[in-house]
Length: 225
Image 1 (spheres, rainbow, N blue to C red):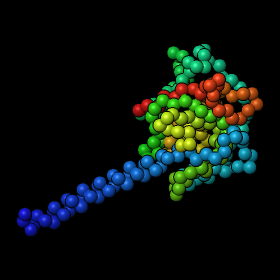
Image 2: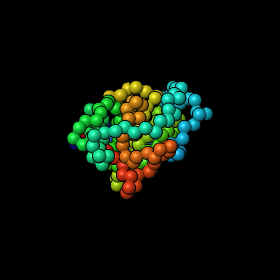
Image 3: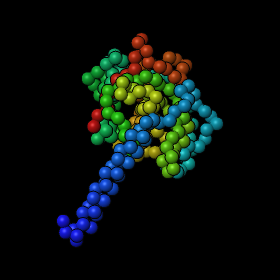
Image 4: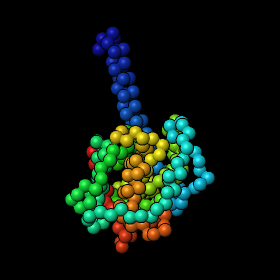
């Protein structure tokens, strides 16, 4: 090998090394960031009246009182609850709720950003809570969101419940139709309210939280590209 070609070879190897290192770093960052979708510690469903301010994308946001508009009403569909299911299209950033073979509603949503992806798969709602606090991230991605309304947590064998993925109402942005979350499926709050009372498990009257069971099954959710 000629000596004059040696610097080019070293430079080329250095570029390959940097590219591989960057790829490994991004993959590890992505995996680490999706360990927990929405940091949630309170599953009581209670609204905290003392929480007045949320933080999202380095901005302070007033927490709306609508998050405690507790009605406990049912949203009726034509099909049996067991025939209802929800479809989330990640590529289109849309959600469709199916009532048997009929479309119950359709809405734009915001799913996880590329480094906090919403995992695809078939899931079941395992818990519904009327309101909860979500906190996580760091730096400019830190978020503190009290009284997140109409939360429907879902899980499957590959995505266990402790990871905190859910459908829920959103008061801190209105960028629906684009990826904008830390992994959860962000919904316009009026749509989240409809789905909250339409999905299983059925919420007992006067309660703010309900777990699914063999007698009170959670609605099926299918998330796909």
